[in-house]
Amino acid sequence: MPHQHLDHIEIARLLALTGHYSTRTAWQAVSLLTERSSLWFHDGELSVLLPEAARHDEPRELAADARVIDGYERLLDAVLADHHYLPERTAIELSGGMDSSNVAISLAARHGLTLLSGALIQGGAAGEQQTRRREAIIRYSGFRDIVLSSADYLPFDPKHTPREPLGPHEEIYIAGHSTLLDRWKRDGALWAVAGVGGDEMLSLPPEGHPPLTLAEVPRWLTPSTFEALRDQESGIPPAPPISDSTLRALACGAPMYLRAGLWPLYPLADPVMWRFGQWLPFSWRRNKHLARARLQRLSFDQEVTHPPLRENFHEVLHQALLRFGPDAIRRMLDMGSPLIDGKFIDADEVSAVALRLEQKRPLERDEMVAHVLRLHHALI
Image 1: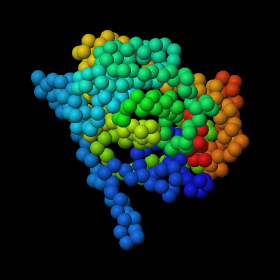
Image 2: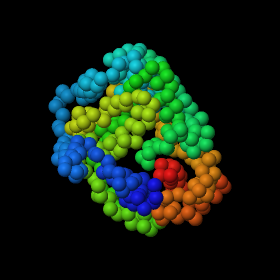
Image 3: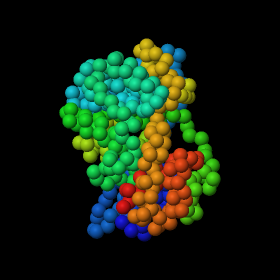
Image 4: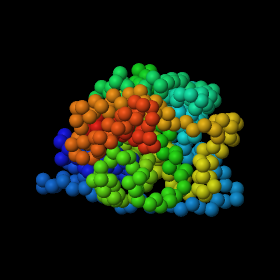
């Protein structure tokens, strides 16, 4: 689609990683029907009816004999019971983190040995830690487990080019995740459970942040793209019943599950769980104390409840860009891009990133070029 039809505000948000849950998409002519909204078509006119802002609650004072962990377990069990799924045809994405582990334990209590599980395993010491933590959960639950090495599914590796175009909001690590989902599907799964929403459920109220400055965004963003970032409220719907970031995570992940023929379930993103989290005093929410305390009560060791190493995909992305980034960037520059034609990014600055990656000398924020490549391939 020509660059004239792109939505400059949403493209700027995607490039600077300042996304909002909103009606805006990458294209001016395409709008998102946000949660609880209604679409009306009458006498040839299309209109959108937005909902009332959802009420958000404040922390409550606990009774002296309050059994918070018991309440959390009962509520999570009730949310799972409220979903329709067949246990023998259900898989859980079990990274070994606090959220997926707690969901896995509740599923194991309900269904025993009937479920599948799986994950992408990180490299290095963090991956070894992740493996040990997952093995502890698997021993407890008895799930039938599948693991894939993230090093075998690096982003931008030409041998993992998606079979079909991906949307602008989809994740960078989709090659490995899609392979895992395909394995589950071949094993008979029809539903997939994930721990998305747990971070936000136990988060503390956000602090105000000053506006972005030019020094805080990648150097390849053009002045007009940076200027578009100032319109932060455009297209934002009334307050949803769960967090903005949770809704964006669901929108990012759901297409991947649906393409694989799996229906995603997100129990920790249920508004009931979100309200429970808001009611909790900060002491139970800070550093996800509730999720850790439940695992401690079940006698999981310190490495499971308080892992010393961070487990994320940052190192995977770093290695992918060093190996495949220069060629991917130069292919984009050679073929042309709506992001360049529309003056969203400076081609010379992006070319300089390719050179730094080739020399193994990336600068701070150079790894954000991954989102340039992802968005380029979604738009062409």
